[in-house]
Each structure stands twice: as structure tokens, then as C-alpha cells.
Length: 133
Image 1: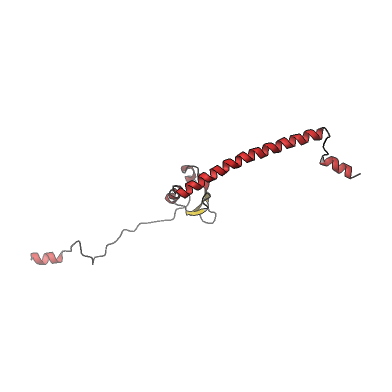
Image 2: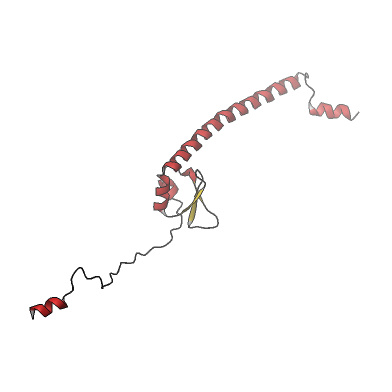
């Protein structure tokens, strides 16, 4: 009887029994705008207008799944960090030149206004008045 009972019992090594895996429920995650506040310097993150389940990384020019963990994984990649740093450097350079250009433009406008008031420069209005005679 002992012999029969041991034959009827299944051993752990029996490969004929299929093992069922637990199904993991997964659903698509839509982008939540408040996540921009959670991620540091999230100016690089933009919605994809056609698909609420996708976001775009403006620094890397990549479309990502809108899941929070997917965004965090992308944010931690070395490529993304390098691109964000590069964008910040470019922005700083642009700001330096923009300030210089706007300052030069204002100075030129002041010089022109001063010369026009002293009548050392012909203004467009005077030019029109002279040409209509």
C-alpha cells in the first residue's frame, strides 16, 4: 500500500503539470498634468495632441508612453540628462545674445530719436513730405 501511495503522489519534478502564471492586469496610463510638478525641470515634457496615452520629450525628441514609471525611466537615462543639460546651456547662450541685441536696438532707437529731434537725420515723415511736392 505504501508503494501505491507513493506512485499516486506527484513529485515536484513532474513536468506534465502545467504551471499557471498569475495574470497581471495592465491598463494604459493617460498623462496626468500634475506629474510635471513632480518631475524636476519638466519643461522638456509635452503632451502629444493626438494621443492622451503618449508624451513627448522635447529634449530628446522622443515619443514615450505616458505612464509615470516610463517617464521616470526615460528621465534617468544618460542620453536624456545630456540633452537637457545641452538645452540649458543653449538657453543661457541665447539669453546672453538676446539681452545684447535688445540693448543695442534700444540704444540705436534713442540715437535715432535724438538725431531726428535735432533734425540731423531725415525721418520717413519728412521724406514723404518732401517727395509729395
